[in-house]
Structure formats: structure tokens, C-alpha cells
Image (cartoon, rainbow, N blue to C red; front, top):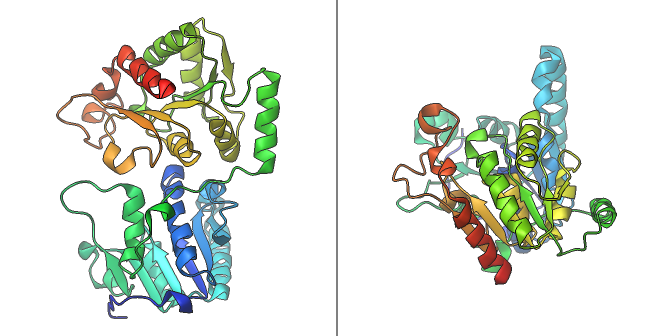
Length: 362
């Protein structure tokens, strides 16, 4: 056991630090400013990340990250013995790094065990009084949840540094995502094949792994028709997930507009390279929306049950579309758990179109 110290960390003494974020794609991308801010304060420190393997591409090539350690969600499906071997190998790799600082950004119980097993000099995690001493005594520092007004997730992540005595400057709070040369080359070739110049198209990504965050296909098709009538070239993307591909098919079936459909053809970093070349991004609360913000692409984001103050596009020209429902943001998976969110389905097409025109004319 260790007592909470809550004292400032001497960043010039840090040799190695580990940042743990075991969440989905967008959540991981929203940690990217933390790495940059920590590296600026401790330029001699090697900063590693521990994330789920499928989210790692969002941090690859980040200039402040030395190594990315991965947990594969498939380990559990490979049997107890195989999972134990993989976990033991991971622990060995982490121990070999001999970290001075551990930053755990979620409530995942693995963080408390890592703090005990790796024994860094300093460690920080969200305060969770309901977890008792097992959680509290694992860390030297903790940061409390915001009170009153909601706080953007980027700022919430950076609170882990503030409690250590580091207050990032505004220019250190930008999202960082590096598509890389290979991703850029593939996207440039795809665009050339469709005679699309950089800055000459609008990128639409209507899907999400959570269907209750999605606008109806018929309304997205209506928006496509209006944009096409104004002469804009349109590029559609989606994850290779079958449900997202079905949504794209439904949109195309309802629209006669000429569309470039790249659904299921792009990796995350290729998606970033594509978005970086678009004049506008249109989507819902999902990882591609955060990718667009990271690439500095003006963004029209449609929000339903999730909160735009915590999850909205970060530091980019934007229009966030929300309804006037008094019950939102509720955080539920659709009204009464139905997977359909009335606060999204009732958003008018003309209102979203007007927001697009505002950003395109800015």
C-alpha cells in the first residue's frame, strides 16, 4: 500500500512514463494532447502508451510517443492458457521499461494492478471513492470528476497532468494524428482515380458502431441531394462493419446523386488522410468526427443522446447540430433503450444543410 502524496512531480527527473487508455477509438485519440504536453514539460522522458490493439493506429507516429504497448481483445477468445501467456509477456515488457510515472485515464481496474506491479514512483488515476482503499492506495495522485458544467474529455484527460503540477498551454491541447506517407499516397491515388482534387469534395461518414448515434438514412440521403444540387462532389466512407455498409447502401438507394463510395476500403490513418483533403466533414458523434477535428477539417456534427460539451469536435471550425429535446443528453442507447434516438431522428435536413452552407461559405 502507498499513501496519496498529491505533491507536484519534478518533470525534469522523469526518464520513462506510461499512459494507459483502455477505451474505444475516439477516446484514445482524445488523449493525444496529453502526450504532447507531457513531452514538452519533460523532453528527456520516453513516453509510452498502453491501449487496445485496434485503437493503436490513432497514436502511431505521434511524435511524443516512444512505444505503444497493445492489449488484444481477442486474447480472451484464445483460451485461458494463451491469454495468460500474452498477459505475462505484456507485463514483462512493461516491467522492463522501469517507469517513473504511470498515468491511468479510466476506471479500468487494470490500472490499479499495474500501479502495484510496476511500482512507479508517481502514479495518477481518476478518483473513485466507491472503490475503497484498493483503488485509492494504488496511486500517489488522483483527479476528481468535474462539478457543475460538463468538461470536454480532452480537458478531463489533461486534468491528470494538472494534478501533478503541469498546466498545459493552449497550443499544447490540440489533437495530434499523423496519417503517414503510405496512407497519404493511397488516398491521393484514390482521389486521382475519381478526378477529385484536394479541397474539392465533402466527406460524409454517417455511421457509428452505435446505431443510436446515427441519423436516419433517408435524411442523410436528403442532405446528399441538396449538396449535390449545389455542385459539391461527395465522398462516402464507413467502417467494414456490415451494419454500416447497409446504411451506406440505404443512402445510395435513396439518392440519385453521383457519389464516390470508399466504404470499408480505408484504414483509420487512411481515413485521416482523406479527411485532411476534404473541404468539409459531416458525421455523427464517432471516431471519424474526432479524426476530422484532428486534421483541422471544418466539421458538421450531429449529436443525439451523447453530450456535445464532453464529446464535441475539438478546436476546429464546427457546427454541432442538436435538437431541442429537454431530455438530452441522456447518454442512453436510444429512447427507452430502443436503439432509436428521437432527438436525432427529428433533426431537420434543411437545418443541417444550412449549417453546411455556413461552414462552406466561411
